Image (cartoon, rainbow, N blue to C red; front, side, top):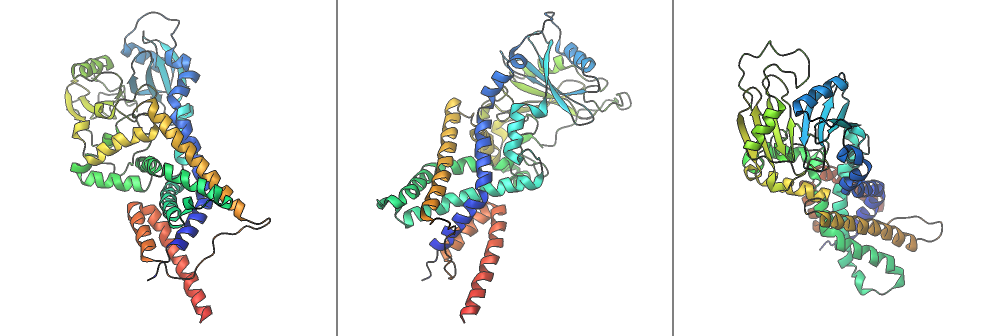
Length: 446
């Protein structure tokens, strides 16, 4: 029986580790940085988040909106985040050049300060983690591929650890290898969970999951066919970000609204104070976001999300809700709660905050941090193990045994390839290269 499983796994494990380690280090370190973004932002944006304006006169939210538009010429208001005390409320404004800012309002709805949204700590770390600050699709493919191969490293490393019976050896030469293996086993399960719960952001697999969820409403209640979930999308719950929003009842307002592209200048539109009041009557409590209608047929979208990426705005997954209000009458048209999600929507609604480290408070952050540190240590020990086995001036990898791969090795790669299509495509390339090498050597031996 052909048992050539160890050698393919060993070589794939070795070369994959060398190729993806730079990205793995980057993803792990940026992930650690993102874990504590609320705590970091609370310190560096203390004035914006908690400060007060010198103007102590109370004004309504709608008056504040008008002041913001006067103060920030060329900007329109697209979103308002009503956050629980002691945080200041946040108003998102944008212009035609694609620049957006956060404007902070104190308890009197007076302007405190503003920040360039792209350069806030949380958004910077999110972009760093997902695309290495490039925002290019190709880089996001590389990031996803790295995550997929990290799972293979865990699977192959676990197999080799028990196949070599490493822990039965007391040799000092294998000390670093034993530590590398032990750390790998310790972080195996939590690391796989962290990787899998990051899949909603992936550009390839995430879009496929979104498409499946959209095509099977009972599973997902989502329509993410063209918009896979990412950590820099509006603060709308993952499961409803791309739902077809219901349209407001159109009562002859066409032709009367302004020609401006602003979301907040449509004639006959309800005021923000009205929408806040309506939300309260529907038992939607802070924190929540209000997104302006996109056009005269659009609706006000009020949402509570568990994965907003905004300090002070996240809620528990089972508190998620997305409500749509007619922009002219203020009537509630539709509301989707966590209970309405399918199994895919619910899984990722819980999974994303687990990945981000705030599902169960500080304990979640500390657990994720320990997993990341152990993973970094495992990488270091693996490198030290290889260095200890090399002679001075020598640098080589595992030798190739020119035998067909075992059924077990092929089956493992096939299963992982089906579960992670991008990984599967990369394995097909490797398999073609391996086949060419195998038959070339066979021809020479003959």
